[in-house]
Length: 333
Image (spheres, rainbow, N blue to C red):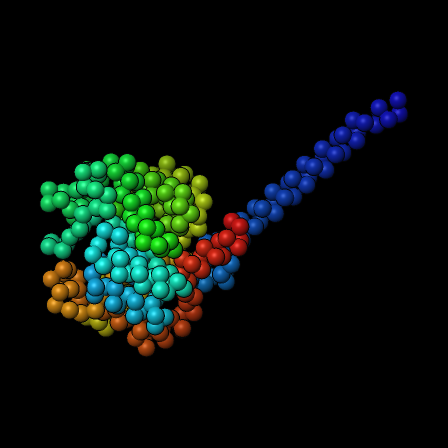
């Protein structure tokens, strides 16, 4: 009888201990989360630091882009690049990536073909994705036209085809991102894109949307960020970045250097991917795009001694997607 009387007390004590232990673990977890003010800190980069990825877009589009991108990567002036699977010089860039496995080369998933005369169709046979194809048999020139005409199923089919094209060439890309932001042009496109990234375990350029200021910034840029997309992003199981932006245009090379330095100085702490489009100067490049001068400057600005000294003064830490994934896997986040 003595033991029966004390049993409720014992059970209460055990339950109270378990509850206290659970609360302690919960408090520890909350403290741990609070310590991670951004993804840079989550991945073990020093607190309060700007962690930047200088990322070359549009590799594979033309030979001029490939020449500049390869050179800047080899020289260590930029950290990352992505090649466009539908474009004429994609295979050239992928073969180079296979020969340089330490380089961070991803896929610049392209659902648009924006130039006046230099254009490309989808990787998927055009009759299988008619909503992605214009009257000239090429992909639409603008994001708005893709959103207006293409279905989510067609977008997902083309994204997978572009990834599979790289895999068939014997190269597993280090990351995937989106040409002209098209895959963030509609919430359902974005969800399909991020879901495919998780299926292949290839990180996408996913931005942490738990920061309301970041969400408001991108809404101000015209991106249709919905509460549903933000909720979906919470379930995204690969690493994210804190911010994403592009090199500003300018009227002169000197102004471009100053504008880029101003951009970097204005960035908050955390991981920021900055995109640009390096190309070497040729007459052929000038027939492709009216932005040829910006692209030529972007091919030389990161090797400029003034820019190198600026980065050192700012205390910038450079990274790439390979390093981000390595840290992510080690941290078991």
